[in-house]
Length: 180
Image (cartoon, rainbow, N blue to C red; front, side, top):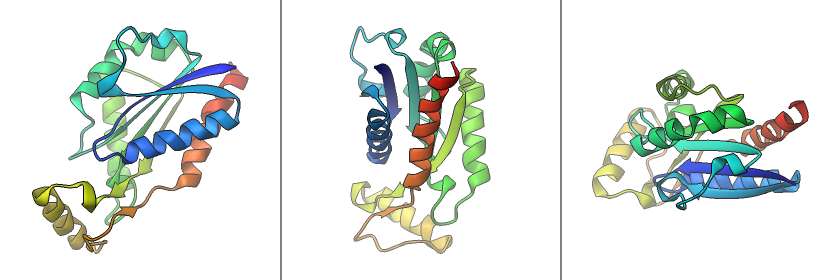
């Protein structure tokens, strides 16, 4: 059974939902999957003990978290030596006022910063989670989204993720093992 590690960074929890979906899909394809938040990796965890690695992170204000960049740099040699994939989650990728070209630019900038060239790298639309934001961020997001003609009812959350695209990403990752 192939062992796959998924490390991820999430702020409001939507990236974790995407990770769960990827993990479930890979498990149905015969992988043993282990997931860890990038800011809570168990001490002594060795990424080289896995057959493949997926790394994912949300983007806020145009950037992936600094601790996440450090984690990828620290494990770049292992990521390069094994089948690996990266996904980036943001409202820029889909949702109100989506700017997919900006989401792609964030992804490319991140990969350049950490000098990593995974076999697969994609962007996923995230979620507008008013219920998880503090007062200031909730008001700021409502204003930004409102200017883009988007969803401003703060009594609920909105998910823009294309779950079919997430499944195709997982399938593509699993397919890397047939090619290696």
